[in-house]
Each structure stands twice: as C-alpha cells, then as structure tokens.
Image (cartoon, rainbow, N blue to C red; front, side, top):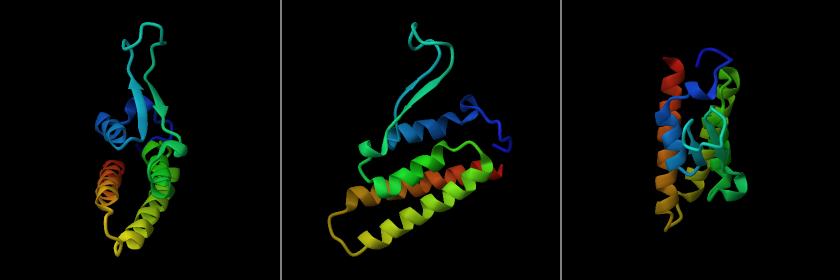
Length: 119
C-alpha cells in the first residue's frame, strides 16, 4: 500500500473477507457475478446507521477502507482510540461478551492492516 494511487483491486482479499465477516461491507461483487454489472469489482458499504456499535465501528470501518497511506495512519490511530475507549468503558459492565468479541476481532483486523502497510 505504499502507492497513494492504490486501487480497490489491490486490497488483499483477506482484508475484504474480514470486513464482510465483521459486517463492515454488506455485499461484495466481482466481475462475472452479475452479467448486468460493468467489469469492475464493487462493494456496497454499510452505513453507520447499520452498525451495531457505531461509536467504534465507524472509525474502524473508515480505517479498513482507507487506501491513502497518510490518511490510513490517522484513521488507524482514531480507530484504536475509539476501541480503547469502548474497552475501558465496558470492562466493568457484565453481559458484554458479544461486543467484547467484536472488539477483539476489530483489534485483530487493525493489527493485520498495520502489518500489511509495513510490508
């Protein structure tokens, strides 16, 4: 991702698959999936209204989809801060196992993204 002109097709498939699994992308189509579509890959993004935990999934979503390396670093920092704030606020609350798992997955996604931009 060292080139600021990175295109969607250059985003590793594993990152896109994680975004779909995390509910950050509602639909992903590839050339040939729909005969009426043009030849490029397309994604349909989930709006923040659709996010289950928008206070931290919004910044995470922005980081995972950012292609500009300078902006990506800023978005990674913002996403990590939002996740850390939420982890701190729910650490004393019982019954948040679903969100805690989602937060752990989010942190894992951010670690993968950070590793990928360093390579």
